[in-house]
Image 1 (tube, rainbow, N blue to C red):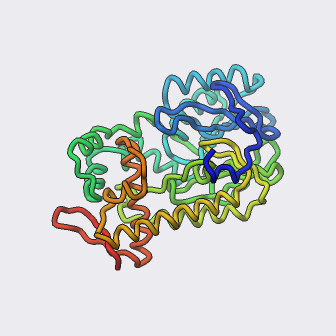
Image 2: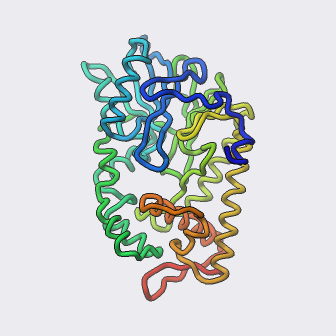
Image 3: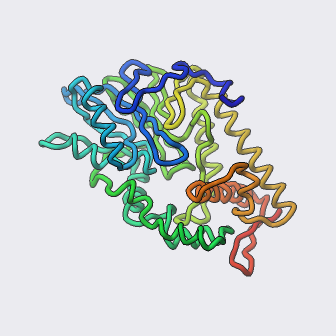
Length: 356
């Protein structure tokens, strides 16, 4: 563990659920872990014991990407972990591929034969997923390439690879269910006789929904609060003048209203306690990054691409580079909208930022 992680409490220590199996983390709450084909190589998914209209069963929270391996892992879960009961609904925290990718398959598989198995998600993220599955906004294609070029990614080979990823999102989310049940901030969802309160968060996705159960003191945080890495907060071509970082920081600060002993179930990493400490760490992390950006821009006007070696000390592949540029733009925009930086577009068409 790194020094920051050592300040958190991991009640399950190094225990992890095997692929296709689950591990109980709280009464009626089971942890499922599946692989991802990225540097971030796993996602945590959750099974909640449920009952609807007299039917006992399970609620799934988040789905994994569309792939044969993920389907096979789910089939193993269904065979060994559901006690012979059906899946009654699928809750998705947000529209990113590792969270919503298999929602269409899960709802169709468990909604067959006249049964209902509805997707529950915020309306904003539902519509964002529908759009992205038909046109890979922000993840690849010509518009994304032009956007990255305007922020200093000028390497022709990298730009061509971005253009070639026009179906990047759709390859992992080929379909989104045609119907959904809307989740909103403050809504209490009865799951197995326990109310789970929806907490909307912003900055990582359009309208991310975390779930908190006061009876269990458990927060399913999705991607809003992760124990080891900082959540990706990016600007993409769909909203090129977005300012997501202040939205994200306000959202995670609001989580400090929850009890100090809350068990946090994150989408990546291990379940932990220490919510308030982790929020403090994230604020300090972004304060430091903002200071580094200000210093670099004071030395010379910088594009987002210029800031990659300042903000990221490791070698990045193309997938990581596109996320990193989005993050760099988010930090630049936070300072720009705050009046501390000004934006200049050069004759080469690249945006650079200098002290205001």
